[in-house]
Length: 339
Image (cartoon, rainbow, N blue to C red; front, top):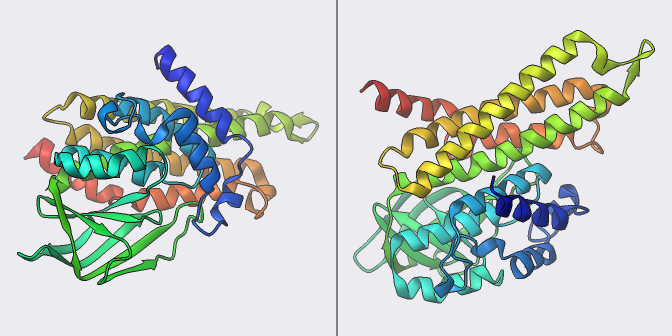
């Protein structure tokens, strides 16, 4: 990280402190709307990678990557991943200036929540009417950006023919929905590749996964130095030291994988899909392993509802399936590297 990145990280971490994920997740929108407004107004997190002409800060996805890491550390519910990164970048990539001028200033100000619907069976007829089903739609958006083939369509979430069904989730800190379209009216917002959206989603998610893994490791490291058994802190036992060392190596490798993928995406590398897939696979596996150690080393308190260990474990296994299971990305890695 640069000095600017560290300053951004510290500012976001300071605002997120004192806002427990479990409390925010219980609110009607599924996140703390007041906190989101503060983050947008005071730090500008929703517009970091948006040009100044559209109300953003004119930075890059690397700055958003820093914020996503902090988001993952605290498991904070909110539209950072789905709206501030995926939706803004989909609009910019699609290249429709009028759509950007109409939607991005509201998103950057925290006044409009948009989400991308790109996973599922989706189609559009000649009149611009959307049909099909989209899965794993993030947040509770007011505007849906629907990807059909290489086209991006703007659809109001409350438009005729749109049905939003909350999905049953393992992770209570991340709300997902299944959205059904039955001839819903759409407005063309340019063209975007679904493959590029997938890579962007995997890279952005990996930042959250690294952040969550980092906090899970730190909390576990702190606990084993405090918990005394047989007259000694349990962190002094060699077997736990070895397991923590293995977790630390996983965390460092996951961090490298995530940032390498982010840099490739920002640079517009022609081979950005490969590090994106590697980040999705490795960061998913690393978070699962480290969250598992968090539960094991915290002992009995880790399986109580009041302790956050189970939330990190839930996030680990839910994120592994988000935007495609690791096995799916391993298959495309094999095809790219061996084909």
